[in-house]
Image 1: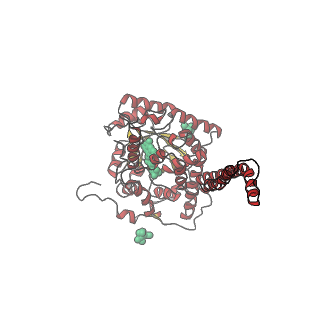
Image 2: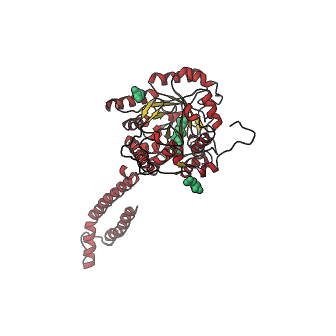
Image 3: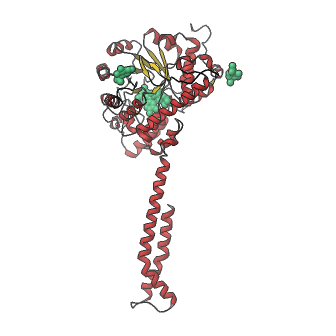
Length: 462
Ligand SMILES: Cc1cc2nc3c(=O)[nH]c(=O)nc-3n(C[C@H](O)[C@H](O)[C@H](O)COP(=O)(O)O)c2cc1C
Ligand SMILES: *[C@@H]1O[C@H](CO)[C@@H](O)[C@H](O)[C@H]1NC(C)=O
Ligand SMILES: *[C@@H]1O[C@H](CO)[C@@H](O)[C@H](O)[C@H]1NC(C)=O
């Protein structure tokens, strides 16, 4: 902008001189006198000056644009926390994608409570324990993972990066991390598995990485069953049924964007248009696709899902200790405490609060099934807090969406390295060298416990 203004100024300064020469003289040749000579010389140089000023302006402008572009995408090494990717992604993402990833239900309370509650817990570190050799591996549903964290299911990753889920999976596989693939993925689930297996081959089959599948149960049972069969045939290790989405949450930012788009276009677009090769996706841009999630789903449905699937089953989106008891009764292998990253019910408990609820009222659960947590985890220390309270592993969502958007597979790897390093240094200073040494007495939960739900007297057998 600055350079263009300069260029215009110089053009305005020269033009009248040229004009006046043409207007003042009827005959060709220079007018006598020193001032006229000067003007004549200037006018001879005018085209050249214009060219030169344009040329230099062009160079400066290009450099400025280049610098701005570089400022938008800082060097990957400048991302030192998992939240750093968010700023970068905001600059590179299309507005619609940014809104999709960052939006949450209503005023955002369910999301901010996820983020804030981790800071309500303090560690109680132990000293002078040998922490020379570190082991961060965890067994997740029968398969070792390099880390006690994994990427939680996120739909429509093609909106983050053209490489979509296959690229995310390549980054995760290189790090030995597990990934949960969404029903609402941009790419077909078989293609995503192929990318994982191909990356495995490139790594000499040394990566402990595995893929699990997140299931939105479609209303049509025949479609639902054939989807489960596809997941099974493709070789996914576990099935995570999302149970917090009896309907799509009301996401404010999506609604604003949707309303504006409808006004601009004068038509209501079909949400499936942007979903590319997948028609099991429930929504993008705030519009729910009819039939994509079954509001009629009940505990009884777990029977046919389980027999159709025949492998480890996890319920994703448990938000109260009562439902944990039911999950145990129904014999599932795992539960993921989650409020869907604050995107579903408004005023949800944070996933950490639900974890504390289980620790307080039903600690036996930790021996009966694997307990996972996701929502607002942004630091390796957060991961450890969850593990101290009994979680097997945790899921991480948005930081990976943003890392993928900004840097592709390298971003995914970097984000993993960042959280893994934080995990290790916190473990060392906490005085543990492997995850099985983590105990509830290594954290102080008084502040959070203060706000925890208590059974209404006489009303509960908890
Ligand atoms: C962009 C985006 C898309 C998501 N898509 C799905 C989905 O398709 N299925 C699902 O069960 N959960 C979905 N979730 C919820 C995540 O699996 C996870 O619960 C949540 O992102 C964790 O919170 P965090 O983003 O604060 O880490 C999505 C979350 C985000 C941010
Ligand atoms: C999952 O991990 C196990 C080892 O833990 C491995 O044998 C299996 O092939 C992996 N599956 C996939 C799909 O990568
Ligand atoms: C636990 O945390 C609370 C609130 O921060 C504090 O008042 C209390 O002293 C702590 N207790 C211990 C044992 O550290």
